Amino acid sequence: MVVLRKRKQPEPSAAQQDGLQKMLDAAASASSLLIFTGSGLSATSGMSTFSTKGGLYERAQKRFGVTDGKKLFTFSFFEKQRLEAMAFFADIYAEAKRAKPSAGHRALAAIAAMGKLQRHYTMNIDGLAETVGLTTWHPDTNPSGQTLEMHGNIHELVCPECGDVTDVSSAQLRTIRAKRALRCGHCGDADLRCRVMLYDDGEADVITPEDVFDVLEEDVGAADMILWVGISFQQSASTAYFRRVRHFLQDAGRLQQCKQVVVNLSEDCLWNLLSSLSNTDDLHVIEVLASSDEALPKLAARLAQTPAAARQPPPPTLHPLDQARESGCS
Image (tube, rainbow, N blue to C red; front, side):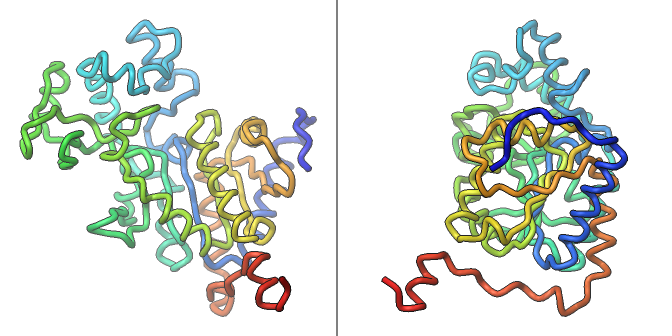
């Protein structure tokens, strides 16, 4: 049972080294890593984070005069001020165009090249994983893609009516910045929008298909180590993903076997996560107080030292009920 109370933290350097070492020790026996990433992964790439000072929420608050900048990223706001919201997203697009992959992105690519990446799930919309060679998942055209974009991609426009997706062109960008609508050139029945997931998105099915969770359940079943990197757990989506992953592990009877790691510079990250959970029994998480640019390259280096024999997938773990059936118990 994890007791939810603020604790006196050890010296940052000591806590950092302790968490890093625990992660590296756990990686020694890992053969299939499932990695979730948030805005912290792209912080040194030139991308703004959401909730930090000067971040997207604060900028939205000032630009639109709302009490909470998060409101801009809700579907209800988007419906009422679609053109203004699209113009704001154009600024994020320009930021993403200038951004460069970080050391953390390159480490992800190295882990994938070793054959140790089960899949990369990102809440980022910057498309930077693709720039280091990670392929992007698509249910029809690339079901084996290495990166699954949970919240879409700012470089793309999508039609909410027919689902047609196109890359943003220079001409379209000028139209968006001029706050003029872009009609879908494929079906002609609706205006294009950025392929970016919003809170309570009424058009979510054209941003990220629902069957991603079927893929996620399979990936959780195959993983022996799960990392949550650069995620503050201040947003409801990230905590919902963690709860869903935990549910999958519990159903498979693997909650103790599959190690979970939270990587973030902030000491509040794990606190935010634990505070969002109604039940913390049997929850064991390795806390790494480090940036993704420090932790992921060290993880990749450790995985590169893993003997070939240890890289074989672990034997499947039966659910307790299935174990009982095999042993003849009723």
